[in-house]
Length: 222
Image (cartoon, rainbow, N blue to C red; front, side, top):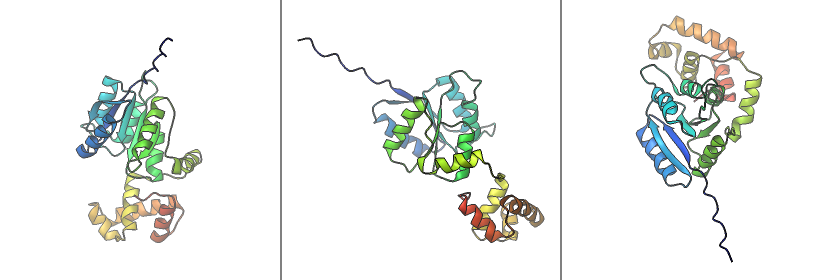
C-alpha cells in the first residue's frame, strides 16, 4: 500500500507590526511568533516608518496601531493606513487596525482610510489570528459589534467634528468650564466659545449637557 500523500503546508502569513509602544509590540511579537502560520518580518515604531517598511518589505498584512506616534513628517496612523492602501500602489498590503477604543469616530476613520478591518486590543488572540487570516485572504473584517452601525452612518454621514471640537467636547464631558478649557488649550475663552457654537450647530443642540448626551449616544467620546 502506497503511503498517503502529506497534506500541503499552509503558507506563512508575513506580518508587519506598527506600534510606538515597545511593550505592546513585544506582546504582539511573542503572540504571533508562538502561533503557527505567522511570521513577523518587521516592526515600525512610528507612522512614517510604517509607510516606508510596508513598501520595502511587502508584508501580507500590516498590523497598525491607529494612534501610533508620528514621524518627522507628522504622519499619523490614519494617514499611514491611507498611504499604504492607496490604490495606485501595486501590491499594497491590507492594513488591519488595532486600537484600544471602539468609538464610532475611530472605526469610521480606519475604514475610510482603507483599512481591511478594525480590532480592539482587548479581543482574544483567536480573534486577532482570524482577522489577520481574513485580511491576508482579501476579506474585510470590521469589528462585528459596531461595524453595521458605523457602515450605516458612513452611508448616511452626519456632520463630522474637527479634532479641536472633539477635544473641547471631551473636556466638556469631564465638567471643565470654558475658562478651564481655554487655559488647557492655551487659547482664549472667545475662541472656545466660537468652537462651541459650531459644535452645537453640528450636533443640533443648544447646551453643553445636550452636546455631551448626543456625543455619548453616538460614541464620540473616548
